[in-house]
Image 1 (tube, one colour):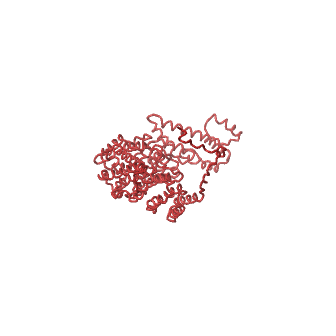
Image 2 (cartoon, one colour; image 1 turned 135 degrees about the vertical axis):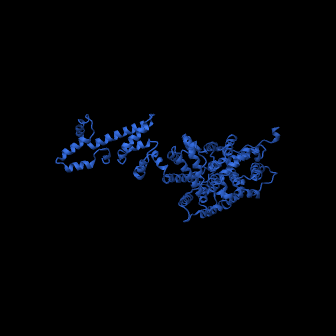
Image 3 (cartoon, rainbow, N blue to C red; image 1 turned 90 degrees about the vertical axis):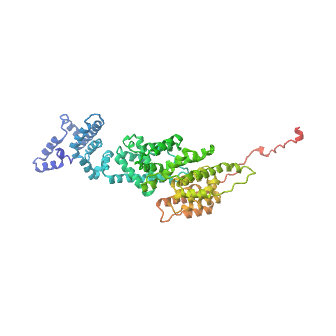
Length: 574
């Protein structure tokens, strides 16, 4: 075994030299074995017995080495977990004597075990590990952490594939056509953060505040570069994963911890109740002068699509609550806070990009004019089915929302977001009339928010439940020509349309189906995912076999030929 010379143990080169200079090679080999074998008096008589059974000395010594190695690793772990005052010092002393054999593959696990259990490893050891790719690859995460803390670029190389994997997983959920239901918002926060990426990042960070800050910086940078809100989700999930594992060293220094914890509870319930609203308002109002930068992180927490979804749903419920109680939205403190939170989340990118940490100003007219307009639309949706059943009332005529409504959703991100969630509300209720009224107006939404993946994913899922409506050309015109057509230049919109087509193609008129397929047909400028999704769609359409029409059931019964009795005359009934 090579590599033991630093410990004073001869290796193969020593044996080769002895054989070269000796006159009796067999005697030299025997002498070498006696000097370097297992020096146990009780073992010597047993060796010839092993020879008789054909056990080679190499196999014997390897088995002894493996057994001793496992025992030693067990003892090291026991020493590290003990409460002895000098246990760390003992490990450091052992490491100092044994680190020289770290490149001996069979002994490396012992040295790595010592390194793993040391809270602070000397720089010279870390440097040697870093310079050897094999040693670095085999090092435990506990050892790598101490290397990463002083090597941000290397840590970034380790983290980057995980971040890319996380985004791919989110996109796969949004664009998957295996399920027509809305699956993106189904999982609870606690289940989501059990995912592979979040757990790996949590383990990589451990209790290191420095590494945690690095990951947050990576997420901020990527969020600014891509505007992808899933990085905001990961920021919240990572903090709550550390919270679940009670890593107080990090949770105690993150000023967003309690705020994120409260938001997480709201997401779990899919509602911001009055009690939690007061808590959240306390956090926002409690930011002290000089700590305004915290707003940047708080805005990222609220920019998480799951947080935005919860806040927007709570606003829609708040509007319904105001209607039920004959109250105005401006008189509801909870409503004002929800609008404030929604604005803060939607303004996260601008705030972090400009480094101006001030809450976006919510214009009063959004509360005093826009919300009552939206509430009026909700009232119309409630009363319309009743009026349609009254013969003396004229049938309602489809009308586009007012010009004032259009101005608000075009200029206000808060108004645009609430309009999107009103659309999801009526589409979930399968209100064909309301869907046809609102969808064309959404193309005016501020910053093209109607093309966000999370909105389109949920909208498509709701439209799938309205599958039968696609037999009507007027409904197809609204959905495809007046809404989706305006976003066809964006790859994500094409993928959402392909997902919709997977579930409603058989209900479309033939000419309309051919027209949409031609519009969706990808070219060289589209990515592989679109080509794959389109090929899957065309294959599904080609293989579609409509269900045979059910034949009327014939009853083979002698009673069918018996004439029905005629009713008795009224006079006879007297």
